Length: 141
Image 1: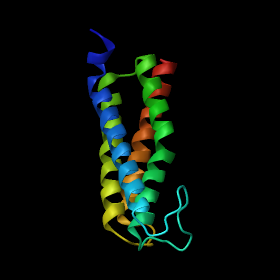
Image 2: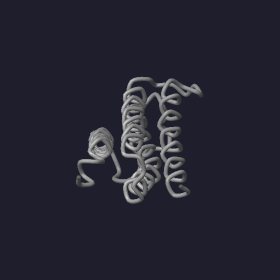
Image 3: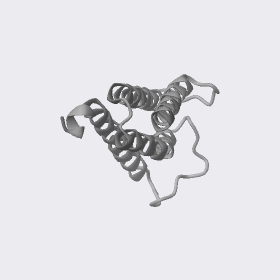
């Protein structure tokens, strides 16, 4: 059996994660570029959660901040032969949590902490920690 078949669930989840990031990039770029007087690469300092431009930018940046650890952990899991079922489950939990986080960030303009999106940020983080733990268990066994 090839690695692609064994880790199909994982690779499908990674595809969804990367597609979500691409969508966030397009939304953030289009929204910002549509603003009058938009300066490439700069978000106006006076923007906050009431602005969709701010929320779209922060959603994309938050995903960029979370993705390197998840990608590294996922690739490590695949390369060391961690349990393919649990690797796929943790990747999918992360993917779904990031999508819900994105939708909530786009929809709810709040500076409340924790906000509803915080719960899904934490679910994604816990999935990443669990996958890293799986990698540790695999390495030590």
